[in-house]
Image (cartoon, rainbow over all chains, first blue to last red; front, top):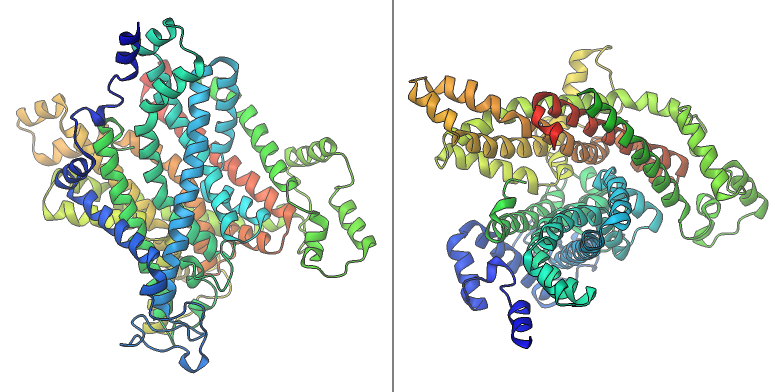
Length: 301
Length: 318
């Protein structure tokens, strides 16, 4: 009995672990087979490094206004120039990476985790619970992502943690749908039937046998949503519903006054836009390649 | 087909009802008193309690929740969304002013993007792994990563610096002066359309690639057909279905694109109306707009599904 149980619980968890490789080996293999994904990973690592070391890396205080330096052109002292308050744009972009990553990561993590848990519950319990949850998810899916985020952000008020919630909620039904469909097919596997026959408790079946098998779509969803979440944060901040001045949020740096000084200081709206695009680009490349590596069936959608 | 349409139409009703409930509830879970927020009292100022009571009465907030919902829903059914708190005008009236612009922008962006994207995507697929393919792919990945409001900002920056042009303050409808209207719309269409074109190009490329591996394509080649005939008549025709579905899923991004693009170019459309209503705490307008946007999203997807079923009869038996 004990041996059977051991074999069942230690069955290959997911196809991606099939050839036993170390973590380093796995990463090396990913970089070799998916060079584009590795480029994306490199951009993400660079962004993480800048965000982590923004305090020491940034040459100036991102909040430090200096009116004698208003609208300074890009120069050796100020690589990306200064804004209308004389703040160093490069320092603000470096600190802005923290906000972009914080919001991007927590919003997609929250959205995918809640959605994933709902998806697994829905699939495993089935019946009326499944039907009800599915209908609620359908209703949430009826809202365009940005519009729902906008409505939620407008009632929560402009603050970074509210933006996280506003972006996370529209992700929930999308993650729930993907995870539910995988969980449904996992549930039909013979080994799940076997564990059920052995008299395992429901929580054990779900946690030890279903959850490990939906990890791959969960991670795919998580990385796929990251770029979108960073874009959404930028859009909300641009519209004045995200972080409030003087927070160095990339979207906020592009909003309002940035365009009215277009003639005088065109560098103000250029560099934050490059930062957003590069960050999202990195996450998209990495996410796409990770999806191909983890689940070739999901390609193209 | 008829039963399929009927089934889909019946399923729409509970979804829309649920959408109405969600919109209504979102606007009711506002932390604090809506009336106070509208009057600006949450900032700590002194507010006359009589004024608060008046606003509450005007919004019907003194009624029980279920009565409020019933009143609102009954209004929605009769296409009466109440009055804007900011302008005092009926919301339907305000909508009518702004809808033509957004509609024109959305349709033009869709049309132009699809017109550019399908040939580009097909070309990239047929010339897979050549420089043409790489250029198209890089361009379309960019469309997914570059925020559309930044593209708009770059357009304005470019126009201001090189032509001394600023965004016009008033919208000229196409039926007044089509040429002036077109000049106004070109850059917003580029801004909204880039993402759309990028996604459609990617989708076209991947479906054409898939179809090109089918047996009947090999047969077409074996028959000695010219490349043009194989690609256009056999491959492209059969890869159009996923592209049609894309119109449905991309509608959400189209609306998001309208919101930011109209803000960048200060165009007085539905998208900017949403942003302004949020800024002015004009909750009846926010509620009406969010509901209408969700409503049109559901309808567009229904139409797309029906078109899909019409083109591909297999879908109905699933």
